[in-house]
Length: 110
Image 1 (tube, rainbow, N blue to C red):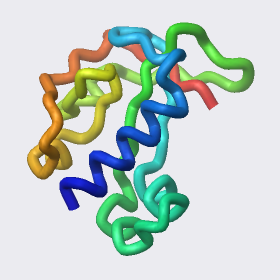
Image 2: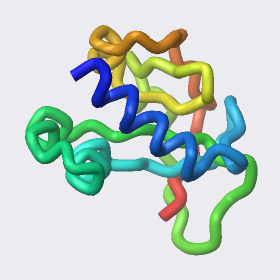
Image 3: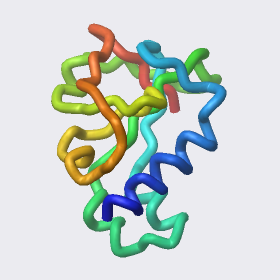
């Protein structure tokens, strides 16, 4: 599972790499279960069914936005790329991470 999680996160980094900014207020939520299915890891979709990666964005996206209390992201871990995931998932990952420190309020972009 370690390797598959790393591949999921690398795929997200490749897609959003130039738009990621660590510490940004605007962010996207990416379903890890959905991403696992798209990448052919159907067995992981149940494991990650409620897990989302947080992708902090340099600039807001067009479309709907919702303000979210930053305390929502307690126990999230931030990887070197700036992407954050629930902390319990990083325990199985070989990637470097630190505690995710969100803004007081975050803006989810849809």
